[in-house]
Every structure is written in structure tokens, then in C-alpha cells.
Amino acid sequence: MDRPRDHGCRQTQRLVVLALFTALLLAAFLASEAAAQTATPTQTRTATATATPTSCRGDPPVVEPVTSPTNLLEQTIRFCGRIVGASSMSVYSGAGSAPIAVTFGSGCTLPCPNPGNASCNQATVQLLPNQSTLIYVCQNNASCGGGGCVSADGLGNPLVIVQVQLTPTPSTPTGTPTMTPTATPTVTASPTVTPTGTPTATPTNTPIGGTLTPTAAPCLGDCNQDRSVTVDEVVEGIDIALDNRPLVDCPSFDCDSVGRATIDCLAAAVDFALNGCP
Image 1 (cartoon, helix red, strand yellow):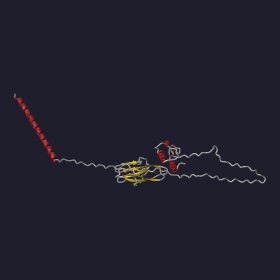
Image 2 (cartoon, helix red, strand yellow):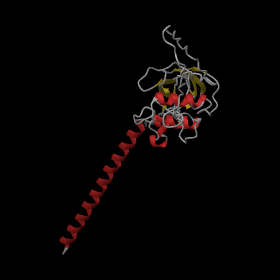
Image 3 (cartoon, one colour):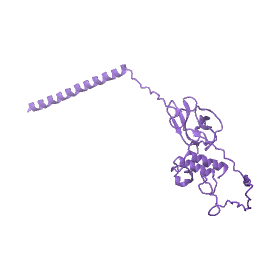
Image 4 (cartoon, helix red, strand yellow):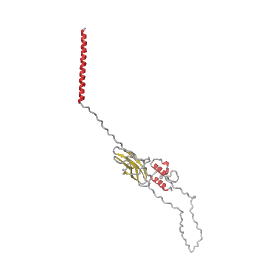
């Protein structure tokens, strides 16, 4: 009866010894870790400041309205934008043309974008006779590529200048024409012939078929047939020439019967607007 009891006691002693050995190993491990942490300095990460990019100053330019149509061969346009530092401006008269020189100017009336950094600038555009010129104004920023190009003024109207060469209108003579009688040849009678007095019939110029009534010449650009051409009708003709409106809105601009409004028709309409219809 004593052997089982002795066996149980031995088992208990072994478990106690094993537990003590495990506790000693754990204590030694924790002590070594603490010593290593004390000897090795802790590295502290320093936050690196991230550079924040400055705002890209490249607002689209604001262009003053242009004068169109015009009989001049050049026109100075004005616009607000930035041309200092990394910012610059460029002007083109048609797609693919060389840039036109931009200088500081004055006389801008529309509000400038970013007024603290923008200024009024100007450029002189050369115009071709009897042609329409489309203008592009661009804001450039070399540091960030901001800005952009516009082809309309600050009011939303297209930057199109129509150059019209004015042709002097010939003066119309007034008064009643004077008929100059032609000399009647004198016939000398022969001595042997005695001429008999015969009444001479005087021809009269009577039109065949009655009196002719002159027909009024066509008035190009007269959209409402009131024998006058207004500025609004000239602008309507420009829109038709640019395909912004159909020709049916004012067929009078198709003076060449080609199905569209040509520069010659626009020029004639401007002439009638300035000097009246014939």
C-alpha cells in the first residue's frame, strides 16, 4: 500500500522541479532582454517636412471686345493676364501662326483674373484685306503648365475680326440730260431740178410697249427688305459666313449665288450700311 503513495509523491516533486526550472529560464530571458534594451539607444524617427507646392498662377486671360468689321489693316487688342516670373502670354492670329509680341498696356475695362498678380497687356494684330482673322490669347506658366488659350472675349463673343476694304461709291449725276441736236446736212439743188417743199417728219423716242419703270438694285445685307442695312444685319451676315447661323436667316448675303456668304458679299453689305442702298 506504501508504493503507490511514494510514486505519486515523486511525480509531484518532478512537476514542481520542472516548474521551477521553467521559471528560472523565463527570468533569465527577461533579464537579458532588459539588458539589451538598456545598452542599445532607441532611435527616434524625425518627421520630414513635405514641401507643399505653391498654387499654379495660370488663370485664363480675360480679353477686351474687338472691333469688327473694320477697314483698318491692323488692330491692337487688350487683355488681362500675368507676364512676370515663370508666367508669360502669347497671341496668335489663326491656328498655327507665329506668336505676336505682347507688351504691357492700359485701358482694360473688364475685371482681371487674380488681380493681385495680373496686369493689362496688349498686342497688335495684322489683318489681311477682305478676310476674317481668328485671334487666340494664351496664358502660359513654365513651372506648372497652368493657364490655357481663349478664342472669345470676356463677354463670350468670338475673337473674330473681319477686315473690309471700302470701295468708293461713284457719284450719281442729277438733273435732266440735255439733248444736243445733230447737224443736218444741207442739200444743194441742181440747176435743172426744182425741189418741192416736203414736210420733214421728226422722229420721237417712244418706248415700245409703254413706259419703262426702273427696277431697284438689290441691297446686299438687307435682311428685312426695308432698303437699309443695319449693324445688326452686318453682324448676322458675319455669323452666317462663320457657319454660326444658316443662310436661310438672311439669303441676301448670298450675292454670288454660291450657297454661302462670301467676303465680297460682306464687304458690299458694309458699304451699303455706311453709304445707303442704291
